[in-house]
Image (cartoon, rainbow, N blue to C red; front, top):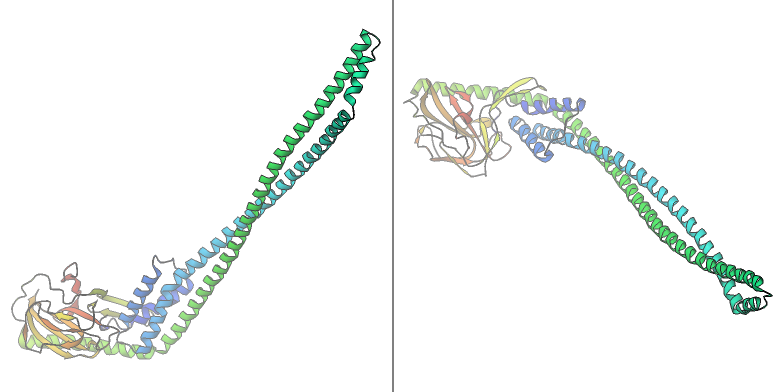
Length: 413
């Protein structure tokens, strides 16, 4: 995160504070990765506020975190509310199914009770027949046949005996059928009972899920409320830093003007030397790009800020190498830039082409020294207006900054 150039310093809070006010009124869709979004928002805030005071940076960082986290929190509330509705519907459906299953069980159980009663009645009749047979009813029937007075009387008596035997066999068949029906009804009653118990268990599970979803929704809403309060507190803290941040902004504008004037003065005194040989610059440090070059508008303080270089995060003490061969025209302390080195590489498109390296922990070169491409000229640090170890790298033409990514390898390696 480089030194806040004339158009860059205030955009820190500005961008974030305006974003805060906007987000209070307009719902923001959930980010794919809230943690990454929050981290990027904080880095942007810190990059824009590097020249501001510690309190302003802290306020901007807090606001950025709350602002970046809010969309995901709002999405969690919406999701939780949807789950609550869905689980309530499921719980109601499961309850109705349980009631239906229980009613079905009661109906089938009643059928089984009736079937069991019919078995008992049939058993009693069969038992009566058995008792009668045991008491000699068979001999009585034989006596009935023996007492016939003639052929016709015998036939009549045989018919009566046959009828009695068919009746007894019918009672036995009735008992057998009643038992079979009772067993079927008993099996159905058992299945209905198991179904009812399973339905009631499912209804209980759905009810617990609905209660859990309701609790999750309440927690999600509480998180949103806390984030809103945090953003309001951060905004109030940022407003207290207004005067200081604007003063730092004006100081950054003056510092940028001094850098440009110093480079133009050096070129007027010494000339810009031979023509730059051309070709891509060497990557000055091994690290990853943490902030881009470009103008940024801060709607809170209503100023434009220019981040005059690209930032490359790297471990403190990492070597910084000259991006191209040239003459050192500045090496020393330079306000918010901290330890700052600039190397002129000759003419390009009629202007002096210079690369600059800010926030160094150590400088190994001095003004007037000629350095070669790849030579170690310093070490990565966090001097000046910096929020962490990184190299702020600039490319300037006649003192005016241009996007260094145009001249570095596309892979930044």
